[in-house]
Image (cartoon, rainbow, N blue to C red):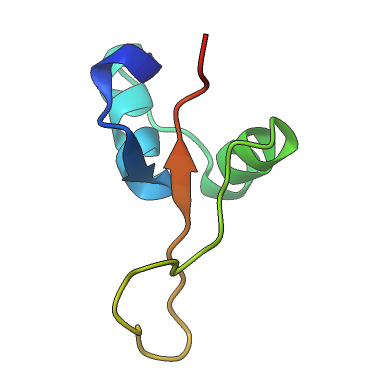
Length: 65
């Protein structure tokens, strides 16, 4: 899956790609929890412009293997 993604991408982008490949929707909180447990999430907002309060953006890095 990660080979289809750019080096850095958002959780939402990853979730949409997984949903497209699976052909079904994925529960947002469960998906995010699974990704965060795998320690793939990097510092949210690192190097990105500030976002309005109440919105979140987390970058994910593809595992190196």
